[in-house]
Image (cartoon, rainbow, N blue to C red):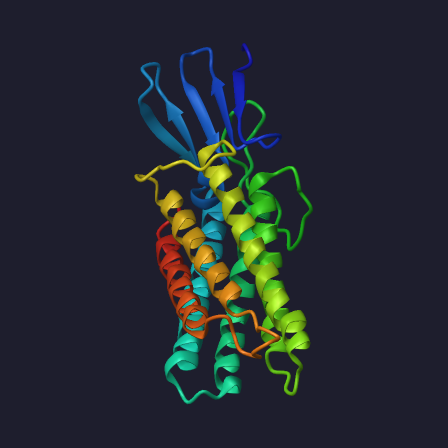
Length: 280
């Protein structure tokens, strides 16, 4: 049998979509997000219409459902707790330890969501060289695949959640000078926000198959990425407003810091709800 001809697409050196043209007229399309989220390949007939979707085996699909449920639930709960912490900081008693405790609990859920997102990439079904059915690989708790855009995006996301953890732990420290507050609390906050924004940009590149963002309003995956990226922008605005001025020993703008965190956290909670439906 004549081997299938294939075409690769993606952003820069990364491949996010492969298209095989078979001799019998069928076209098989593998997309990295579709495969790792829904465990599916698209098969198109000679006329270009989608004839069917081939799925991974039952074990692979069950694995994807479990991982997606954990990741979406973790981001939903983490977002709600961050929103609650911001609400307590804005409207509560003013006790910094109370809001810091709530933030820390939310950060643990963000850690879980980030790591589970990485596990989704590592344990997603893999395509064959000739565009055949997706194959379920052995379970892995860790892997290094920097030339995969989905791995890079989720790795940066997970790293961002860990950096946020440093910020959240340091926020419990008492008696710090202004310089120590900005170095130990504010700087990790900003670095975490930058990593979240970079991860979101890479996720856009994966779903758009190019470096520039696109609009795919009919794609649930695109909405998940867009909502989370908007939340990351709000987190960054909040972080910039939370800088402590040495001259006044007060934040640049407390209201913007709290409201930015609250609204950004709600975006991640909503993104978690949307992600729950992006499953096999």
